[in-house]
Image 1 (cartoon, helix red, strand yellow):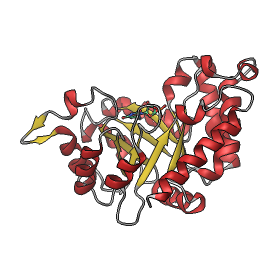
Image 2 (tube, helix red, strand yellow):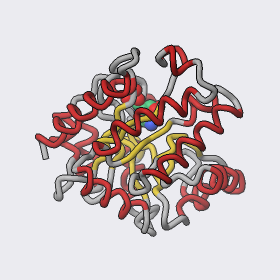
Image 3 (cartoon, protein in one colour):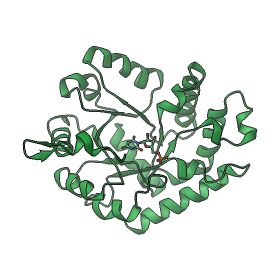
Length: 272
Ligand code: NUP
């Protein structure tokens, strides 16, 4: 089964387009979790055990784990293995935004798909298709390319005009076309840019988009659903991290996360 089939099955089973971002931050963890040997893993485990029925994917961002050094990387691996063992139908996306020259990308491929063994990874397109071949050739995995990011300054490069069109449109065209030989590519489009999302959906009607920016960054579910859904009322992986993880920082954090995830899943489904 390839990534998109696995994702589709998870969407069917959970009736959800919601992805929970597993982005633990030490200063935001409940006190009793902070004291554990593997605080990020214990935190994630509790979040996963209360939200697994409500999500189509989990998305740990590598930065939060790398910040702790080897112990953080180990907890990232423990998190990925936990999902694979207990909830193997739910795909795991590593948000790492990698992308280097081809020979160096082989190292990233090993880390992401052999050591961590996740289902999909985020990459930036700046070095071009040739450099990303070690990723693009992986027919079973999800290759998720940054197209229009959610941050306030994303337009600095992404909206510059290249041959009469904004750069993000060039990215959307190439990635959905000639980069997508094995039908394993997805695009990242921020929830905070609905008009760009609409244009990108027009260019790539059948692609799946990873949509960050809902919740803490202010993106609106209604905008994303109006402009991002595909003809089958799917085609979106809608991520939220902080709004769910830190719905409460007390002992009830996992139940509060579940309530928030359920609210968001249901809100998304009202537009489907
Ligand atoms: O354009 C992007 N915006 C963004 O926020 C691309 C991303 N991958 N992200 C990531 O999504 C970000 O690094 C974080 O892991 C998550 C959003 O988190 P939150 O704002 O929901 O807490």
